[in-house]
Image (tube, rainbow, N blue to C red; front, side, top):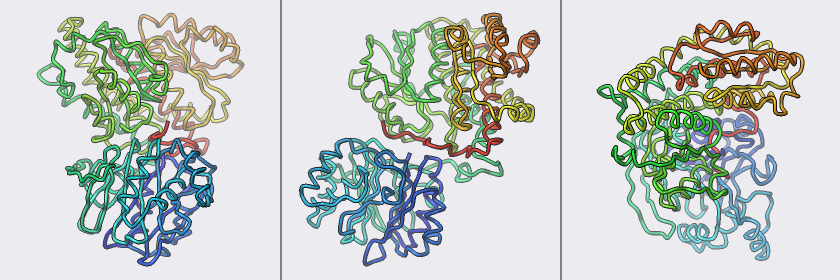
Length: 608
């Protein structure tokens, strides 16, 4: 959520900033703005609405001349979306300008203090406090002023800052909100994420917590919050800029769904060696893996749903008890954690605020933390004791597809590894599961090839008011993700239930024509799920069933059936989710929804 781009160099800054902000639209926003230094003063333009409004307002950046500037797309937290609340914000004289991603938690106390000192506030935002604090502490040394301000604010921030008295220096700082800097022959950049500047440079530096950066046209300097100079190494981004483009697809989401076979191949192939699973990133011996007594999985959104799947798979294969927590609840419920427990934190971006806070809490209590993330060099990747990357490449659509699928297969491999070292899997079983893993990419390609049937079915439910997803065991985990996909991009009310729980109250909502999507991929639970299908049918529901090839008897109970290829029962989530993704996508498209940028949502939730 929110996006920051900044530039100082030899070229005009405004077009570069607008271009960079366009690459961050996937993060979610409701207004945009930028400030450009023209050599004499800082000129600002900002507007509520889409980035296109700002582009039109500035004629593509042509009306704001200057080779240093900062830009921002805002996702409202304090104050409604408006021109006035849009970033950048400045001191009363307009000589210090700030863009900010994050939340200043003690801003009310700071604001009251600054008002008593004579400062006038014109917005409802917490960010404006930063501009006035910088003005208050500025005595000709920007680094000193920034340091003093950062020592006094509580919360999270990624900052881009300009001082009119320093026309050749751009400043940046971060704590708990993502920020990177980059450099090429023409200048230096700041950004919230790699896609914003990948067109200009592949050499980036990941800024750590409570670090400050001075950017000049020909160089960078890094400092701690206490003004001590630091040395940092750059990281070369390996993936191609084209990976962040639509490549002819109508939406990023559709493109990313079709990238899932490659994503899964890229995630599993490097870790299958000599007919074994080798996860070198764990940095744990077999003895240490055998010593694990309990696992806590912590995540948000779709990553949480991947964790629910992992609970069934790890407990079923490795016989290790697993608890799965929504990250925002994990640390506040003060969980009872046994000795020899391991914490797994799952996040696509590696910057999810609640998940990062849970990671730090677990580490502070002395527990080993494994991060499963997609973004190399992200905060979770850097702070976890070990990290298992999901090689999904850039994921632009807000609704995750390929990153979720990569998380699933990473968790399957971890479960199999744990089961094998603990002696819970026979060699023949293990080998069979490896073969099933290798087949998943091809099987997903087959399912994607049936998209027209799903599209035709989806068109019937454009006007649906409510849709229910049900399943048992692993199928319940699939239903959670299928329901989320539908509601987040189509805005249709959707709920998921463990199938046996439906009759304990919620079945009262089923009426004639209500669509129920029933997952029935688990052989041991198939007949139980069929019984639940019969129950909702008796109340007037129309049932779409997702089950395994060969289970033709489902057609006696369900109205419409989707069949997935044969695979290990623990892996069915990877296949069953494909028709559910396609269903959600085509319902949203038929409704005319903004599939890649759903309302009120952000790709990376970097505030609590």
